[in-house]
Length: 226
Image (tube, rainbow, N blue to C red):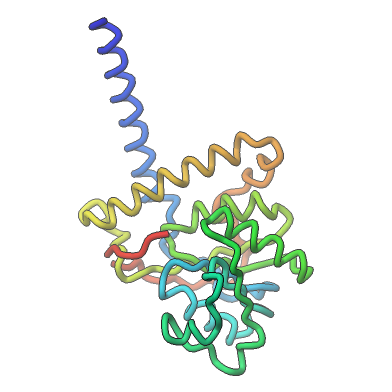
């Protein structure tokens, strides 16, 4: 019985060490630290709810002509554009006709499925994905699996409350990134083990088309979750 317990303990320690090493790799190389492409035009700009900075960024991209329509995925069932004015930002009158609210998604998987359905109805084949930097890797896994033929450009947002550069020194940020890493692992394994989606996941996480690029400084501290 003692040998079994020791072996189980060693196995648990090994698993934790591997998870810890993966976390460090995820935080240093997988999480985006800059916007690699803020010039390429896509059919749609897709914003995932979950942070107050995301929609203003998406609206700015729409105003700049980088997308034909903006799709806000994961909005509450009864939420309207007017409700967004009080909660997040006022949608300018000249853009309101190009903003579409998605009410079906409850999580990242739902975001991907809801967006895939909307893109198909619009006959769109490309999108710029706007979400928090810490949420981007998992979002790309789900979006690429749900729509493997759609061109996706990552447009991470860097919440001022997330100290991404020195994440291990900040309890809230460390917890947020550790949780997101664990969710990312689950999503990646689930999609990779599905034969239908393996090809879609073969591309690098941040494979972006060549073109002008612009860097955004990494932020600082924790707060929003998804």
